[in-house]
Figure 1 (cartoon, helix red, strand yellow):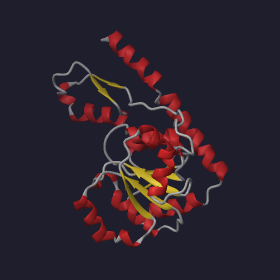
Figure 2: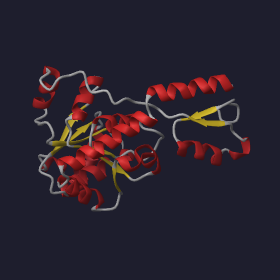
Figure 3: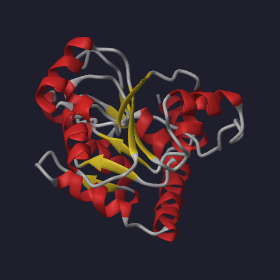
Figure 4: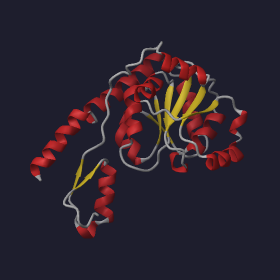
Length: 237
């Protein structure tokens, strides 16, 4: 595909670097245009039955839960996030929004015994965009453990909706969030320590971080900005 393409549009600076390095012999022509998102609040009100019913069903309260959202696969760091949350002193819940994968779940239960920790809550999938946005807006913090890929859509959406985002420290996440998020590593104790620090943040500190994240999405990842980049690509090619 690289060999015969006229132009490769990469949604990440680091993906573009990989393409140029890995397929250097083909002298690929590339361009970087990210995926996009928005910072528009959810259309659902705090009292909307869809949101209230979902929260009640899963035993959650606004601003009293951490969350993560992603495919239930090892490369999204679920083992690390669950282990570290269990080892943290957080009194809040950890809502895991993901698909079913019984084999992987049983493996994690055997390793971690998370079923003994009432804070760990697998809440299934949420495919309604406005509901998911509302859930993100009411989260105390979002955890993002994706270690592969380019510009992750769920990360952009979280940056536009959740004030505090705790990201695994890999190049893709750094590229997207910059200093608008807090970072952890796969090392034992790293995320647990960050969670404990997050618990001590003031409302002002949390709000400031959220404003920085929203500004980053608006300035660098808005659909309007990305649309203009595509227009320029078509004009040139």
